[in-house]
Length: 307
Image (cartoon, rainbow, N blue to C red; front, side, top):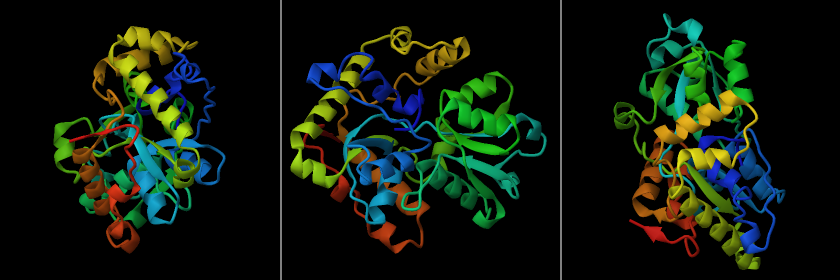
């Protein structure tokens, strides 16, 4: 899973901290990575039984022949912020001004393009910027990685995550160019309400060890249901932050994005259709991507479905 302490993936960080794994008689071992595509690579190379990644990244892997199946939803809204280092405030005023710049995205792999990279490419194309006119670099998916890229000037902009983006904004180190939480930005992106963080596994694991899959989904559902009943202060208290600024940023993000998470892990038909629309728009000209039918890589027998 990406992280640590990335807001979109926070329910997974919380599973062992609230004892949801022990309630199932197991011990959950978390392997944090620099991006959903890397997490998915750990899944298909059998270094992990499950991964949590953006659904569009999982679709990218599936279109390239990867054995990946989505089994539950983790959050209910994509939280992405395209942020630009503060020193460029007078020069970069719209997406087109990123022409010739260096842009960081969550780390992709050869077989899977991360959701953040797909989103960056879509925004660039929508404002007439050729992908050849920018340089894409891996930005990871943690505070240390994303903050260091921008503070050192290694990247001019990053398609970043919360709570890291808001913390950098509060410290006057960046400004926001596009925030997916902004209704105006959502209107300009086909499929903007796509399923972001989702729980995935391999088809072979579903076939050979269905009870293991059932336990993983129950752990996630129990954690999501616990979160829905807690205050942001209680949730943050389970994370044992040693850094006061990191704790404050997470607390404020939970207050701001209170409805970001799925309440029970169920997969939404509406959201899956939105995700398919987003993925096809970001992969124009890719025959395998265009042919991919999202329902064929979803198994909701343990999580359930909703409209």
